[in-house]
Image 1: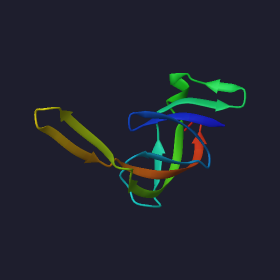
Image 2 (image 1 turned 180 degrees about the vertical axis):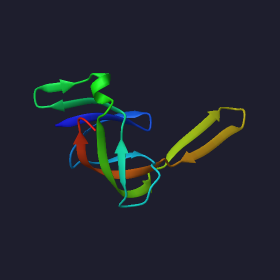
Image 3 (image 1 turned 90 degrees about the horizontal axis):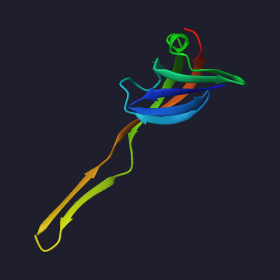
Length: 105
């Protein structure tokens, strides 16, 4: 059984027991979080994509840690104009472990 959930503007395919990195969530390590924006649930041969049925579906997970991703360098350059701008960015993330996929409430 797996589900497709949207969080942080991205859709992810998750199964029970998966440990994934998502956009930064508020909460402390060990706290439980619920994702209510479930887009699809597949259980064997049964596929549920109806918005009315998925309105009560939830995915529960536990926060395992917080961190920051690898540094991404944004470098802007114009030759012969002395224009050079270098910026770095590290995207914060939260590591979660999926515990339950509930098809109805």
